[in-house]
Amino acid sequence: MKMIVDAPRNNDLQADVVLPEDQARAEIYALLGNLFYQSPSAELLETIATSQTMCNDDIDSGFCRAWRALQQAATNADVEAVKDEFDTAFIGTGRQPVMLYGSFYLAGFLNEKPLAQLRDELTKMGLARSGDSHETEDHISALCDVMRFLVAGDQDTPPAALDAQRDFFLRNIKSWDSRLCDAVIGANQTYFYKHVAQFAREFFAIENESFAFA
Image 1 (cartoon, rainbow, N blue to C red):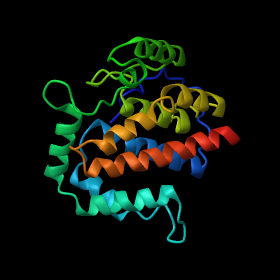
Image 2: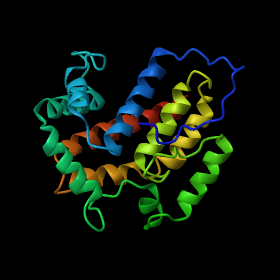
Image 3: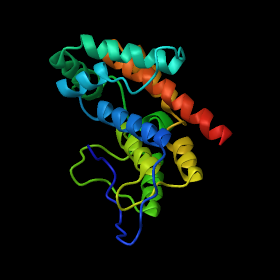
């Protein structure tokens, strides 16, 4: 899934080598972007459940506890049940029980000033909404996709400077992620996604702390 990474290409530009820790960050952003964009496939659930690339057994942090809980939830998950959960919690009929859009948390309504400001910011960055996306740019999955792009770049575009990553994260994710995670965790319609939200909360907290000391 690529929500927002239609970027201008510069074929003369050699992308920087991405450090292993930054590649890991980008992969987590990609995972969260996928999980919040659509219900996970059986293959993705299996990948989460069996992954051994994150959190050694001797690491007992909030992030690792959240990751192991998500792995256990993925192990026990039924694909159709998780799809029903996603549709009920995040799509619904009429107004969805849990909103995944920044404008809702920052302004109280959808498609408000924060979305317009974000679109201006993305335009200045040379990024645009992918034509096949059915969500607006302030959807949490889109913002995770932008962060993935800023952290790791792609074959034509080097990673963004750390200051640019920090500024985008603080302005467009950290300003409302706690309220989003609270809403997902507190919803009656969620079970698997409570673990996704707790994992997201812990990851965003690490990102915030790392940016503060960078």
